[in-house]
Image 1 (cartoon, rainbow, N blue to C red):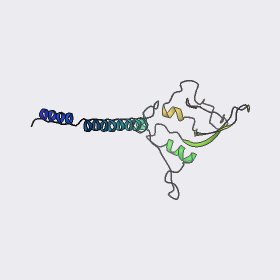
Image 2 (image 1 turned 180 degrees about the horizontal axis):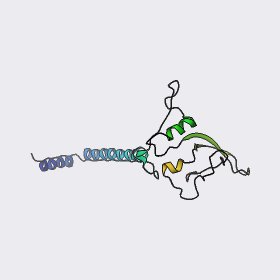
Image 3 (image 1 turned 180 degrees about the vertical axis):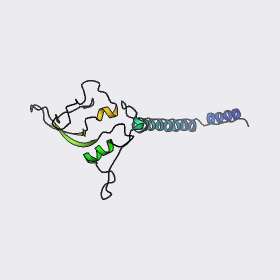
Length: 157
C-alpha cells in the first residue's frame, strides 16, 4: 500500500467511529499544546540569554573554595583583585546577594526588606548594560574615601 492509500484507509476508519476520532484529536491537541507551552517557558527562562547583556557567551563565574565548606564559596576582595590581574581577563566584577532595607528616608512609608545585590562599581560596564533612564555609578562612588551609599534601582523595583 502507498502512503496515500494508508491515509485514506485511516480516514475511513475514523469516519466509522467518530467518538474515537474526536478523542484522538483532542488528546493530540492537548499533548501538542502542553509541550509547546512548556517549551516556551523553558526557552524564555533557561535557554535564551538575559536581555541587555553584551557578549553573554563570554561570561564566566569564578568561585573560590578551600574544600572545607561550600563548593561555591565567596571570594575575598584580594582574590577578586588577583583574578582581575590575570592574563586574558578582559574585565572582572564581583557581586553578592544580600537583604537590603529600603525606606524613603522621611519615615512617610514603612521600611521594606528586599533582596538586593552589592556590586563593584564596574558591574554595569563589564556586563555592557546601559540604563534606560538615570545613571549607574560615578567615578568617585564605591572607592575608598568616596560615596558608598549609592543605589541603582531596576525597572521592576
